[in-house]
Length: 127
Image (tube, rainbow, N blue to C red; front, side, top):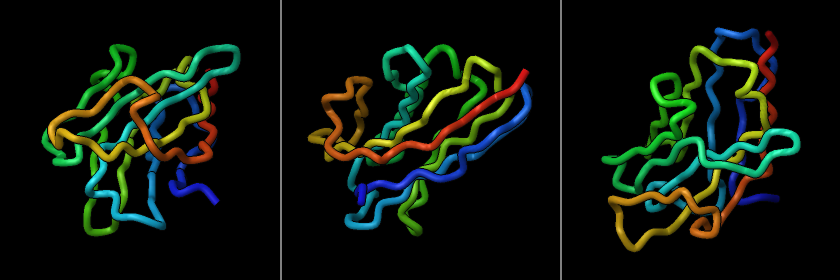
């Protein structure tokens, strides 16, 4: 079983919303920076958003900026990705990943920085 589990994916119409959640069952997620990545068919996996372990910093790809919001809830040990105004080009498998950082105020776009990965959840946006 993957140390991270994503949930909340599904099929939605263009303009709709989904909320993805990333949970950790074997460690305390609040000590980790967390990234949400996605991989569309025939494309490389790319960073969508990340949040620092401190929670004070976030980053977004240009393609989702202003539409997606990443947040963390250290009480229930999850990191969520609220996705609004979804477009067909957002269709992909979405993965969360966790990195135990040296700097609590940084999160990374590079996949190699992340220590743990989930198995992914499918998001499909119909036009």
